[in-house]
Length: 198
Image (cartoon, rainbow, N blue to C red):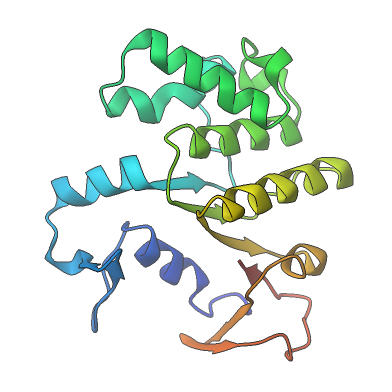
């Protein structure tokens, strides 16, 4: 949790291997990512980390399942297996009946669930989610948080930024960040500009 400009996005970019720290080290599963070249970082991002973006980042001319399969295309997975895994991921987020719909034919909440399915399709160890419930109604939010709980119970790490206190309250660990410094705990009252991390 922290105000705008506190460093949340920078921290998430480092955790997601989109950026490297300017000082110190970041180890992912015991490996210092600062010693990896761009090709190695791309492999880590593609196979071990799932990203859920606030703006969805869906391709408007492609169906839901085609958007979801994209990380598998870049990993060299065969077409039939890509389709099977994309359909499975979409069913997991409650969109089994929308696999052939394009983003423009889906509500904002459904588009966000497609984004979540795309993050899950590679079966990543780490899921980074930026405001994943922002466009969802209360029922869809509860379903998505339950899914994140299941993924966590299976051994995955979920890092989540949210403006919603009730979402942050579901977290097993809350980290507050201000001016690039971290402090752990739930003793900081939320403010209007507060976001949370899970």
